[in-house]
Length: 249
Ligand SMILES: C[S@@+](CC[C@H](N)C(=O)[O-])C[C@H]1O[C@@H](n2cnc3c(N)ncnc32)[C@H](O)[C@@H]1O
Image (cartoon, rainbow, N blue to C red; front, side):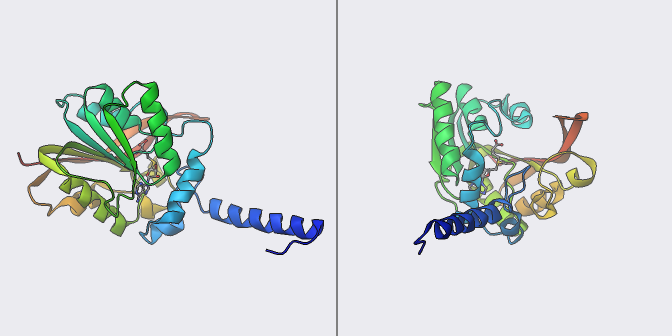
């Protein structure tokens, strides 16, 4: 960098700012994903930095309460070991820990993981939940033998999604439960919120297809579910894909 003078310095700052904006403008302002990368089905440092930018504000991005479908589907399971893939700020892992589970959350955003650790401490469940920075497509820090694996709103292109979901299924203990919840492709035309790029939206059929030949796994539910969302025009429904699967005991 050669700046040399005030105008030179101003030009350098402007160029830096524009470059940063170009990166940030690739992030959907509703979902925070880089659609260009998601479309290619790739993941990497740039994506993680973009998510870091999303998590760097003072507000919680996803709130403290668990996702309603995670709560509904897992509430009656006996506590065991749980894995929350792409855990974000950890709302689901923290909820599980508060119900007696020993939980592990993995996300490739360092900012998200730092926040998740703080929230776990605030909720006094740090002893029951561990948060780790890792890329779930690469399989970082996944481990095995989990009684429940949650994948909630992980937005990936088809090839990366398939890899991540199969890793999630393979991390199950015998008898373990896999829950996948995601923005559904139909949300674009019939729902509200979520990413606008169809390539990172799921369908129940695609998810069931991704998991079809995972040994010992049975898909118990593969459906679309509605999630009421407050909007300036009143309450509307977002449409999610929900897939529940169980590994043979
Ligand atoms: C929409 S947020 C959902 C967060 C959380 N599951 C929840 O429901 O509150 C999607 C999360 O996926 C994470 N993510 C995306 N790609 C990832 C990858 N390859 N490995 C790990 N985390 C990833 C992002 O950092 C982000 O926190």
